[in-house]
Length: 262
Image (cartoon, rainbow, N blue to C red; front, side, top):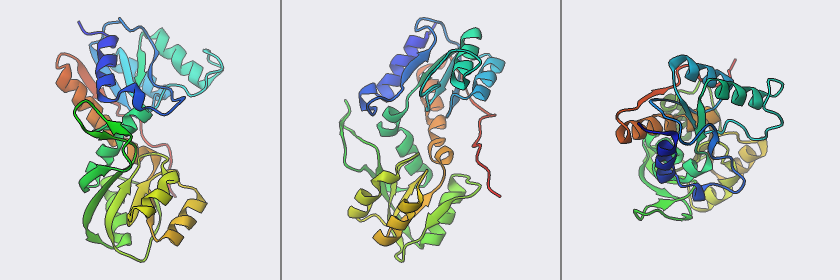
């Protein structure tokens, strides 16, 4: 029977922990490495709702992109992260995640985002290195699309990522070269502009990032943290199913974006 350690090792092969940013919370944050696993639930976030759903479906492992905790003050029901960990422990569920290492890994968050937006000729912006197969890894992806207006491209992003709404600033030039960075990657805007990208799809952009994008002549699209990263859940589930056909893998049906638009 497979154990949590087997899944951990496989996840490490997909997204080595050395790819992660310093201080990131990654790996097995709750549970026993040698505990058996026959069912896994995949979710973008290790929220309390996701933990409850994992218990309800009988999963022994909650596999996520975001960690079950960032800062932990207590493992008790007086602290939200502590409450979630306590619940997982009480129900025999391990919590395993790959965060910024999965952002940077080939095939990970940003390749999934690029694929979802149907970018062509996708490459890694400023690669940090190469994996064992000679593939570049790094955070931002750059690709191309058929020429389209900024407004029409924003509409495509909204449709492809199933956004309830999005924020964007449109440049005056058509879109051909596109950069994508799932989650909060707006800090890379200047480099994206320097490389001649016409548009940058990311999330959590601040007001001044939109102002800078306008002045730099880049169409900046904030499509939402959940929407830009959630496509990786399908990727993770498919990879686990392929490597471990004897393990049942389900994707959370309850975990959705908590942000609403009026």
